[in-house]
Amino acid sequence: SQELRLDREAVLAAVRQDGYALQFAGEALRRDPEVMLEAVKQDGWTLQFAPPDLWEDRCFAAAAVRAHAWALQFAPADLRRDRGLVLAALECHGLALAYVAGSLRHDRDVVFAAVRQDGRALQHAATALTDDLEVVLAAVGQNVVAMRYASLRLQRHEAVRRAAAPAGA
Image (cartoon, rainbow, N blue to C red; front, top):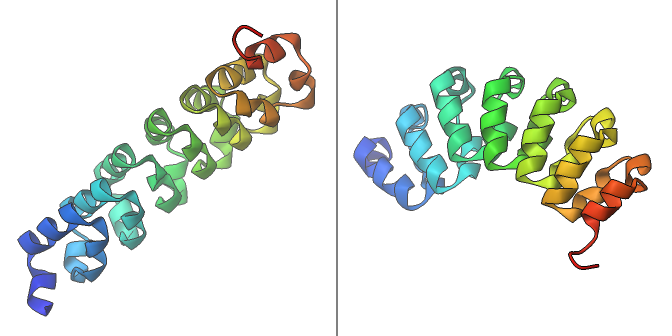
């Protein structure tokens, strides 16, 4: 009912059960940071319903990223360049590197954070970092699949090949 769509407590209860209930909330409640974050905690994909101006609230953006690292894909470009926010996301989910601004994909510390969490994030790193022995060793040590994203030179490197070899082989 229209009444329930505008009732803050009813909407909060609904999104705590199913984040996608947010799509039925009134516009004002979709702009409410607390309501939006409750929905995100339930299902991060609900960020697609966040109005653009809500992202201007740095506290909301940081909380959204902490609640669901994939939030970066819905964030405006300036937030995807925010090193602190990006690092917070990558600590939770390294593959979120896919949504990071290009300049940060060249940042060794940012890429290290991503590959330490999930080695496969190497596929989203700047080409120069796929040829960085330390970065590649960290990635392959976390997930052997990362070897396919390393430069050809490092795929042949003895240390990388050892890191990728199964234990006891």
